[in-house]
Image (cartoon, rainbow, N blue to C red; front, side, top):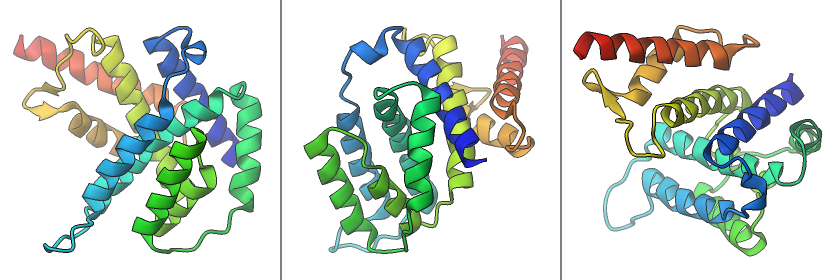
Length: 210
């Protein structure tokens, strides 16, 4: 099950990267820099200012971790095909025994290693998941949803600037969450089901409000 989930996510990540740039592996995109920036945003959602009262926004924290996972998968895919990478990642995942710790310190260590190696610190990421009680099944479900949304946005002109995130008075990610809750995330074609549902709602609402 774990290897299947990993391979499914890696295949989807490859597809969306290819959608943006067909020769993305040869471009040497600075995925590590994206992880660094997302990590800073993540810390803001968690809270770090000692001079004011802050309560961690755990939903946003988990969403930022999913964004980091996208970039981490991209770095892993630079090492080979999805199937082989999934096997390698599964070994590391099954060997991991992380316990909840100091999230801020662990995030800083993860970011430092990312910047120094320019690679994905999978073990460090797993520690961050443990720190915020984000299970792998939850990561998988959240990742599939965000990946579907990313592909959908690209299909409707996100890169060209013609796609608007808000339609029918709500942001597209709100529509996505609502549709995802009505589907079975364990289904083999979950991502395809979710994409179709999102596409159908978008097209029907465009017709309704056009």
